[in-house]
Length: 117
Image (cartoon, rainbow, N blue to C red; front, top):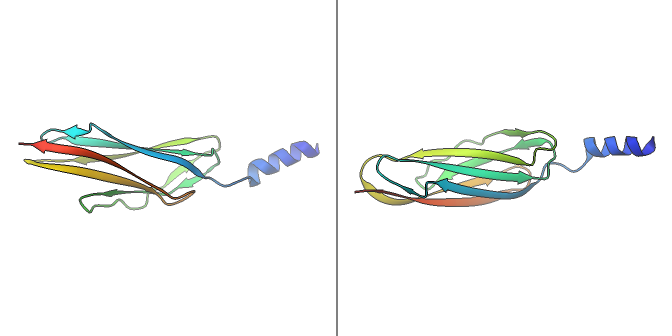
């Protein structure tokens, strides 16, 4: 009985949500004229319940507000999307940074190119 109570207490009062890894990929990595990049952040956690507070920051100076992603017990991953559209002629290398502000703070960056002659 004591073991069962200890197990339930550990589940409820155990360690808090912690971020163990963050990756960001850009699809596609090279955009043509009037293209949209889909940046996908994959946040891996310790599986504890809690709320992630991520934020996207783009190389053009635009930043999202702080987002909220609620994770349930046992959920070890969250996918976060940023869609970035380019129009008109030009050549540029763009980058987007994903910062996790809760759990264990982490920052990762993905780059892609826009090329429209």
